[in-house]
Each structure stands twice: as C-alpha cells, then as structure tokens.
Picture: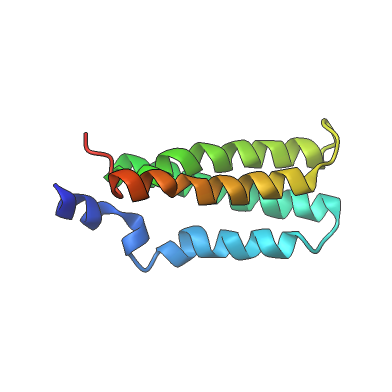
Amino acid sequence: MRTACEHNDLANRTVKWLLWGVPAVVLVLGGFVGSFPRMLLWTSALLSAGTACVVNAARCGRLHCYLTGPLYLVGALTTLLVGLEFVPPRWSWIAMGVIGGTMLSFVPEWVQGKYHVR
C-alpha cells in the first residue's frame, strides 16, 4: 500500500515545482506589490496550489494535503474578498494563516505517517 501511495504522490515528482513551487514564489512576490496586483497574484497562486493539494489528497491520500487543500482554497477566497474590499484589508492575517496553517499541517504526518490509509 505504501509504495502505491508514494507512486501516486505528486510531491514525489518533478511537477511539484510547477504545482507548489511557482505558487510559493508568486505569493512571496505578491507581498511586494499593491493591493490589486497582490489580490490577483495571491488568489491565483492559492487557487492553483489548493487545487493541486486537493487532487493530491484524492490521488494518494497525502495527509497534509487534506488540510492544506481547503486552507489554500479558503485563502484564495479571502484574498479575493480583501482585494475587492468586501472585507477590511488584513493581508498579514492571510499570510500568517497560510504560513502557519501550512506548517501545522505537517504535524499529523509526523505523528501518523505521510499517507492516510483508506
């Protein structure tokens, strides 16, 4: 079972740099621009990384992807709402939520292993 999970894990392939590396760089670069460009950059980066995590969780059962997928998708929605001024601008809250949530999402992997056994 474990080898099948590892084989299906997108994070074990070269494509991981496209799926999560590019969005991470876009998120960092988005921190140095104005509100509207930041909204465009962060929303697209979080949407693509979140979608990749949801797909990876479904493909291989990667435990932290079950947490980061929804986290990034909610982050994308929040970024869109802040950028369109539907809610007060708290870019730092979004950044800290995404960074902190990503770090915390690895804790269950340390306790139970990388993959959720179905």
